[in-house]
Length: 399
Image 1 (cartoon, rainbow, N blue to C red):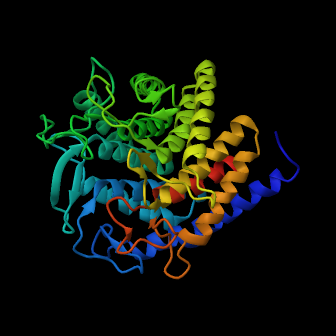
Image 2: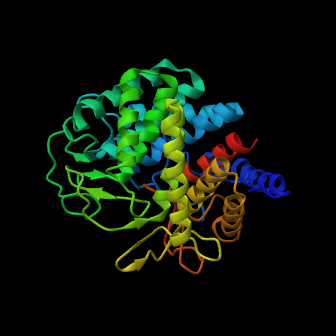
């Protein structure tokens, strides 16, 4: 199903998103987040003021690395290459554990380790950022480092019996005393880590088409078709024990719609027609369920819902993933309703999330669309990854 002005709609959203990417988001991170001493600030206030004493997270730094590596690969500007190289050097110098493998969770501003816990999620983003740096620059040191981190996940984190990847370990990859993840007792395997390990391995496979990476991707897709996906509800399962038993009932609309297009990307990379067809059907269902249950009438996507009700705040990343998920659903189905939804979400972003005074976006809003008091533009979790990835995806898909 199409209509006559779908081309105009696509050009509108694509051109506006890319203009914001080049003139607002990327300049903010180049000009406000680089620490003149070394690396990147661990926190920056909404008005652009850095918090010098804040620890620096590996996830944030891996996402900065991925962002500017991608920007350089797509646009070829040396200013982007300079930030990408700076991020790569800082990450390799401070976050990678060359003794035990994997990635430290955080470091102090002076570069010394502040939290040495090994979380598979962080190592996945390390692979993702470093592999993208090689993809953009051809720097073989980045490729070898990404391979090394892949080996850590496969050798120390992968469950060879029940499949999938465990979540948290001590510094030396011994069993952790921490019970569960995100306050969910007994949770040792999570949807969130699996979708981002898959995303990281997909990028790695593009630059290093090794059979073990391919087999790992095939396993991850199967897990996200079965153990971490409910065919009854069309939604993801978030927290599991080692036998894949679900431990908490949460509907994560934002993760569902994010996974809908990440799965499509991975299935297409594996180049198996029958698998791609299965995933496209699953993708459309996940998008439809997420939009039906999570999208507000004003165009804002809610994060999640559990027995207590909807999440109170609105996050920037849920809006970004909704736009990509809708564009992907339109490309699969040809139904212009998904483009109309993407435009509606983008209109909400322009009205409420973009900070036209200090730059970048507000990362979290109250339910009424006002900025969350005390929130940061930059923090362990508040990063450039989702908003820039939205721009890069639209650039690749619509132009």
